[in-house]
Length: 125
Image (cartoon, rainbow, N blue to C red; front, top):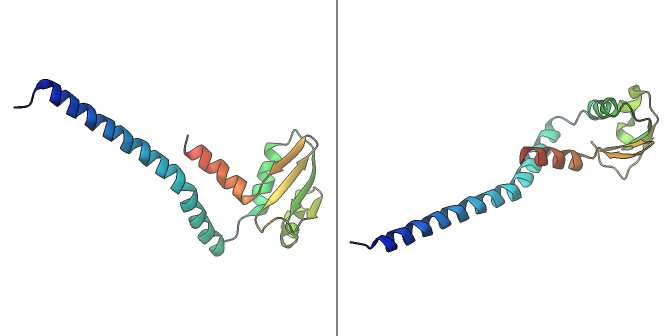
C-alpha cells in the first residue's frame, strides 16, 4: 500500500499534467484558428465573392458621425461602391474584397485580413 504522501504527490503531478494539457490546447487552438478560418474563408470567397459594398456601407453607417472623405478599393470594385455617394478612388495596391475608408480623423482599415483578425479576436475572448 502506498503512503499518503506518495498518493498526494501523484495526484499533484496529475493535476499539473492536466493543467499543462489545457494550456497547450488553448495555445494550439489560438494558433490554428486563424489558419483554419483563412482556409475556409478562401474557399467561400472563391464560391461567392465578398459583398464589399455592403461591408463598406455598414462601416460608413457605423462611423456616420465622422465625415467620410474617400473610400479606396481595387479598381475592379469601385463600380460596386458608387452608390454610397462618397468619393471612391481606385487603389490597386488593395486586393479584391479590401477597402480603406478615409475619415477626417483617420483611416478605417477594411481589408479582409483586418476584418478576419477582428472577428477572430472577438471569438477568442
